[in-house]
Image (cartoon, rainbow, N blue to C red; front, side, top):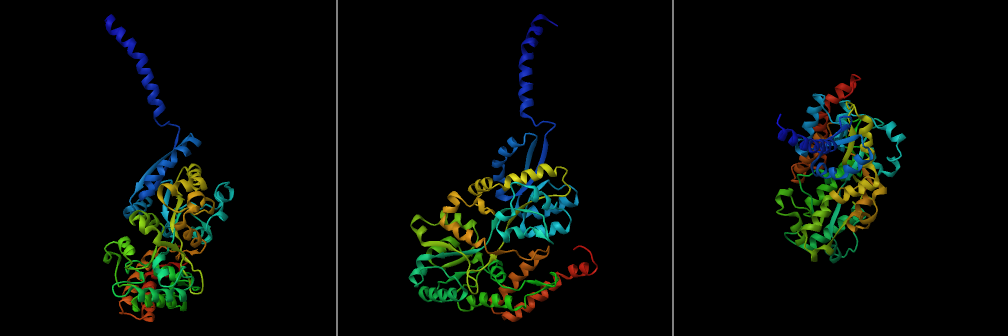
Length: 428
């Protein structure tokens, strides 16, 4: 080796050592535990902003987030289960919980919650918490909530002689009639898109009778309660208060709302942000939100949203639960709301700007009165049949009684396998 080459190597050795040290500091430690977290849609993008604080508090844990599109998430999860490659922690829509419990894929949380200083069941809205309980066992922790209530034109309602939103069905009907008379041809009192089952489901959940009977083996749509809800829903079309259209038949919901084409709209919390963004400043004082009225007073609505679950196959259950606990802290949930607009499921997180938001206040009220849909894997198929039968009835092809019988028949066919399995003492 020449003297000049040796001198060059001696100069480079310290630099190489420094670079090696920097590289080692930036690379994940071989001793760190990687928690795989699958999240859907916008939530999967945003949650990464909350994780550095968690990782600082847990130096030996690193969270690896995989974002899934909602359209592919269900199939991806089932494929992962079949291939024994499920994540450690996952965001699940509340209506999916029952299906993955039937697969024996989820870790129950009862003992973890009982020992947790963070997750307090009493701080959660009761109806939302209940969506995660299957056969008396808890399998998920609510992450954010979704429900349905009224968006309405407060100015048009006042012009019709009503300074406040409705508190009962009877009062609501009087308002709907007055708004239609005031608006005239080409204007309606309410928009109920026929391709959405949520408004009818919300009205049905306000009844005393369940939507399924005998251990969720049979449909219960011929019950007095559901027929009452269906009749009320159909009357809004038959009296011309609601147009016979899907949401695709409305060129732009927000523009038509601003024009006064309709005065009431049943929707969810994401539309708070949409109405704030899409309506011009001069139109902002004209609208407000209100809880759903019930048959005889304040009514119930849908308990929806997403929850956090841990898969049974995870070999990192301790670290996975630590992540669930962190994301369940009220202060972290409030930051998550500020990033996404998703409403928190804990009362303790409804503080600051969220508590002061007049449009969100009705959701806070409504969340004290929400009920879950039937907690069975077949529910989404049944809900789709509710939409199809409801649309036929709205067009006058079926009476309310005929629609209820048709819906029971379709539901009973969907639940045939469930009855067969339960009759033989097996898990569905």
